[in-house]
Image (cartoon, rainbow, N blue to C red):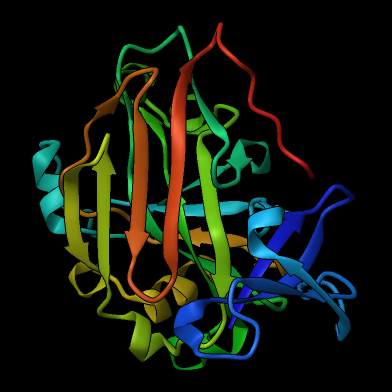
Length: 274
């Protein structure tokens, strides 16, 4: 099931997306839900919106936090000259960094090297504290596509990653959340990133050093995960800098394609519908 957060000339709504490939009765539409499925039980309203008439938004705006995992692909660690950490390397991105599909990534004037990082994102569906790996499936709501945008030069110069990872617009998410995959099904899916149509990254979630169950166990051992929290699971090799005017697309099999345009800080501003 694909659950989108969208606007059709009104306040943000949620709905179930039906595509032509689903071979259902209403291809290319969104069946509207009567609330936020991450906050309360929801039902279908009976209303349908044409997908082409809707503006897709970030599928989730974390109420609490985004927890990201660094160097969880050995080849990516190596391409930046880093060792694989002996303990999972995690960091936070602020929820103000989230934008949706089609929104603008703002390249700050303070950086000369803003990079894309295509990643699988896990959306948490219930309060989770000290969750053993064997029960990780129970706390997952679904999955989406993420771009862990990084000011690489600031990451090196600052000595810590808050600024380099935390600029507004530095966490595109979308195009929707998928809720039908088990951990086993999502553990070997392809991640591809293109920049202006040229492939830059092509990896698989099977290359992750720590899988989703182990990441949830580790993260929930030190911080309580709340419904709507997002875990970014790391990026394959092939990261590279983006420049204003370029378009970056990240595709994860079974989930969808997330596309954003990069703009300079003096260009059009990106806005997020919270």
